[in-house]
Structures are given as structure tokens and as C-alpha cells.
Picture (cartoon, rainbow, N blue to C red):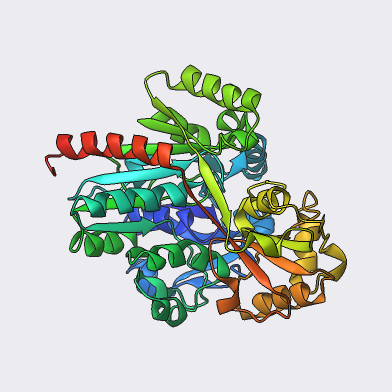
Length: 445
């Protein structure tokens, strides 16, 4: 009898669970002894439950902090470690490989053939070079265009299963604010789901993407994959649109798996061309042509608007930005900062002296953050600490650069100006032309 290979999956509560479900769960050649967790606070110490893990794992699978990987390899006599998270530079990936190999195990990256589900419906995937490039605004514009053509559309969002009980998140459907509350959504989850709800759309997410896909197919003519971080799609796309960010020019050749998304793309949108430097835009364009000369390239205009710009002019402002974009996404600023400068804020206040609890830890970990406050909110405790930090900060106005209405989930003593960002008209027209060709090819219109 061939002995089963022992496996650890390194992840961050997303790609790791998907890889297990589609490749390892019913694979009798392997035994997954553990997951490890990083990037997201408080996801280690849980278990991947037996209900999701399958008959080979009646006790479920433990989840440990990634820092314990060397000890875990030795403790469980592990044969191979699967790296299964995203938005990291190549030096980071290979350093993890060195750690794993030094402990005696193989280091593995699973690709599309092993992990992509195949849909019965046409699939448009929107992926990116880096977190915060502007995937979701493009995904939502695609949904809007397709619905105007009379098609039923369901968006499937990259996973964010952060609940302590993962069995509550097997297959989630979001179509109302009640759904957000019912699933105890974190701020990060709300940032992705709420804008779809605002446009009367439907978005699916969760843990078991086979079940999610089959459920979404029942109500949709077209499936939109709205990617997370810079991960590649869980579903095989008929059309892959990759978003590049010239504010981080060069990352399209330096980050995993963002470069893969560029190499695989049918279309690459160089986003934010209205706010980026011309030389950076051209660097991105050159890099795309070098590694994927057949891809169609679209210049993307990302428009930023304040609900009430007069509230910003001449004021001392606290800028809150989308959490993942400015933390592991590495951006020093986001839409809120752009709006503060465009609308003439007197001063952008440094929130670090006013931070409390885990928000202090966030600033300690991400030292590039200075005059912005990341919208951290992984659980009620951290949301309360974010609220305290906002209320402590000596400012006149809060600029909210997240995609959601923060005042729905926290109470602040300060007036809040919400910033919205959307696809520009010229880019929308190019997207519509692209989609009409796609629909004709798929005989949908």
C-alpha cells in the first residue's frame, strides 16, 4: 500500500480552503494535517470543520499561526506544504519556500488545472496585479452593462470566511443589508458586498465554491468572478480581465500571482490613468506588452467623488482608507487621500497618536502608513477600536475612502464625508464594446 503524503496548507482563510475542497478533500493520496494562517487577524486557532472537511477528516482540521510552520512540519512529519494565499512579492514566496525546504518538506503552488471549477454558464473573471487596483468597480460596471442588455447576472466574490464557525459561511448569498447583518460581516466583507446591494445586485461568497457556483448558476445567465487580492479565479473564465495599477508600476512583474493574471489575460485595464504619472502608465504598458503581447489594453479612468466636497475644503481631515489596499496591498494612500487633496483640505491629520488596541498593532506592522487610518474591522472588538480611534483623533471631518457607509456599523462624533469611486464614461464605453463582442460570441445577444 502506498503511504499517504502528509500536507500542510499555508493560507489566509480563502484560497487555502478552496484548494483543499477541490484538490485534497476527496484525494486518498494525501492527508492534510493542518492549515496555517496569516495576513488576517484572529483566524488562527480555529478548525476547518468536519462538515466541510469530508469523511476523511471526522475531527476537522486544525488551523495554526503560520509562524509555527517549521515546528509543524517536524511534529507531523510533513511531506509537502502548499502555499495558498496572494498579494505577496516573489522574494516573500521564495523565502517561505526556503523555510519549508529547510524543514525537509516540498513546497508546492497549485495552478488553474488543479483548482479551477468549470461553469455551465459563461464566466467573466476580473482579477488584478495587486490588491486595490480597482477590480470591484470594474466588476460592478460589467454587471450594470449586462443587466441593461436584459441578462441575469450573479457575481461570485473571492472568499472572506472570517466567522469562527465556518459552517455558517458554506454558501452565502447577499442581496440586502439584512444579509450582511445575518452573516455577521466584517468591514472588509461589507466593503465588497454592500456596493452590489446598493445597485440591487446579487453577490455570492463563502467557503465551498462548488456549491456556490452551482447555486449561482440557477439564477444567472452570466457569472462574474470578482477577484480578491491579486488571486487568480476559482472558476475557469471565458473572458479574463486583469486590472493593473500604475501607482505601483512594476508590480505586474514582481508579485504573486498578479503576474500570472497579466500573462493569462484576454484584456488588461491600466486603471487610474487620470491620477497616475505618465511615465508609470507607460512602464505598465511596456511590461504588459512584454509578457502578454496579444492582450487588449484599455486605459481605465477611475473617478472619485465626494458626497459633499464643501465639508472638506479648508478642514483638518482624518482620512480612512480601504483596509486591504493600504495594509498588505502596500499603498501609502487611496481614494480618500486623493479626495482630500483635490477638494482642498487644510491638513490631513496623522491618526497614529490617537490609535487604540489592535489599531496600534496595525500601524506597528505596516510602517508605511502615516497620515491615513486603515478601515480595520475583523470582528466587533476591532470595529470598536476603530471607532475609538476615530473619536480620539483631533480633526474637523472624517473622509471615508472605503466603498461602504461606515456610519451604518460604527458611531462617530465627527461628521463623515463618504467618497465614491467609479469607472469613467470612456472606460465604460470600451467595456460595453468588449462585452457586446463577448455576448455575440457566446450567442447571448
